[in-house]
Length: 258
Image 1 (cartoon, rainbow, N blue to C red):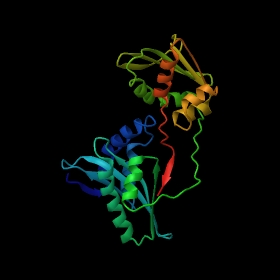
Image 2: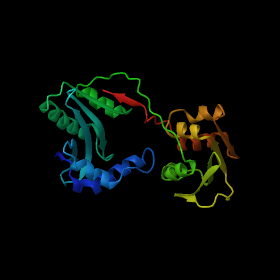
Image 3: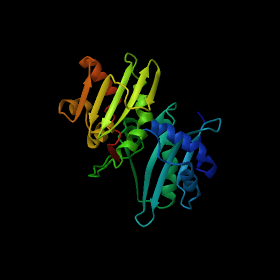
Image 4: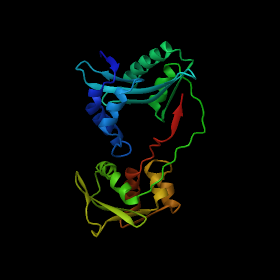
């Protein structure tokens, strides 16, 4: 496959925003970046962001990087690849471009950091990077529970759609706020009224919600340890399946540094 790699342009913003939004939806829900942020990135004098184009000129990957001249350190901050394409094939081409630019600038070291991802790790290892340990910590706190429940609604809808043998109404409750979701066949919708009777109630505090949603703890352990409570007439195996679908252990907030 013939690939073209070029600098990000401001007129790429609409395509990149949609590209990033779809990528983020698969992990954490609606993306927070706005289209104007991509335009701003491209207009910066130190623009170190490239896109990969397929033979039809469509954007299928992008990479963001930064260079600290005083420390002679190049840093690869983000790689996103269209899931329809091979991550290593597209990512390697983008990293090769970034490495060349860093070497031209006189970089003494090149670093990369990202979410724990076997494909990402394999690609960097094959390109000559080695893994380094760090004590870096990521903290996420909910300041507005009602707003947070609204923001994760697209993610919950997407995950409920995965279930094929369950239909009903799910209630997720957190600190005097709740959100209801109704699944009928292949249709899942968030209900506006919270007075609707539910088939399964999942209740937890804000700290536990963040931890199970982001994969910091296993939802089965959280359930057995009383960090979350479940009220339902479903058999235990069906309840377990529902919980594991809602809160998979993806661990995408475990960071690797290379």
